[in-house]
Image (cartoon, rainbow, N blue to C red; front, side):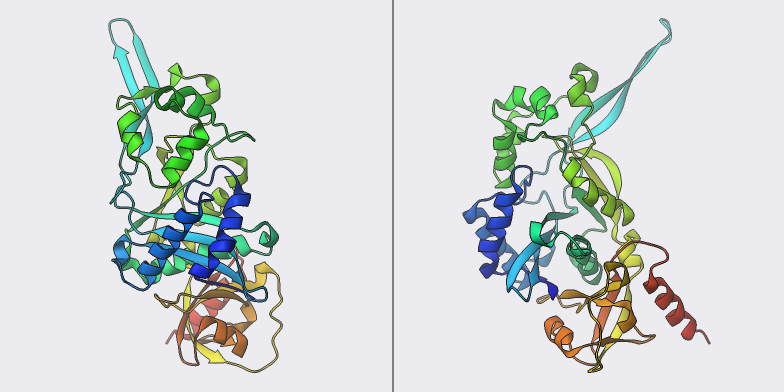
Length: 363
């Protein structure tokens, strides 16, 4: 069985192996034992409320219970820019005109900005190569939206994700080669790594503060501004299906886009349902395709748990859980849980369940 839970200290070895296999480009999870250990400790402090929840880091592990190992991770940074300044470029248009000469020129321009300060970021999505199937990536990503909605008071109304930009097989970014490298005098991989381990003061010290006029850059650099890496396209499509849209900001290193949405507009939030648990010992076939599954969350802050169930388990007012699933979720009969579709699609079975339950409550 696969279950989402808070990341633990015992997951460090599995997390390091995944970060190492991911290679270049995963800024928030570089293969560094000390950094990963500090991130895990910060997440543990957040879940145990030893630190302020609204300033915390929430890291979720995808555990394969049969193998007793962590096979994926995803995260939420409650507020960015509070301790380290959060930098982006805003892609805008500068207009120059002369009525006398009959000239009107629009120039795409990059402006250095801190616009996302104090905003919630979803981050650190990483899945083991052995588990990239059956909707596991969807579960790992979308579970965060269920948590965000249940504990909105700790987060901003707006949620964003910073997508990985275009780079080649050697990790070379065309935008960095044309722009950043001229001011930082270092390779893209080193600058990206320093940013990932929290050493971001060099950005403010070395980055040009004046607008960057894109026509002055080579075509190879202009072409990647606002585009994602090929490996990131599935993640972008998933977020777009959830209601996230490009907000005009790009990463200062590789030009990858930022996408954002308000919590109440996120699809998983809008289509979620609450049901009371009914523990059932009737035989159930739990091995069904992702299209026929729903996510179920125990709605706990300290020990958040999410797994998936066949849609047939969902009733008008209750959800039937086999004892082993209830044990993994740490819930009992009568507890209130949250359900949401695992996969996209307006014709998903859960929509019929929602319609039936709504109709059943009509006077």
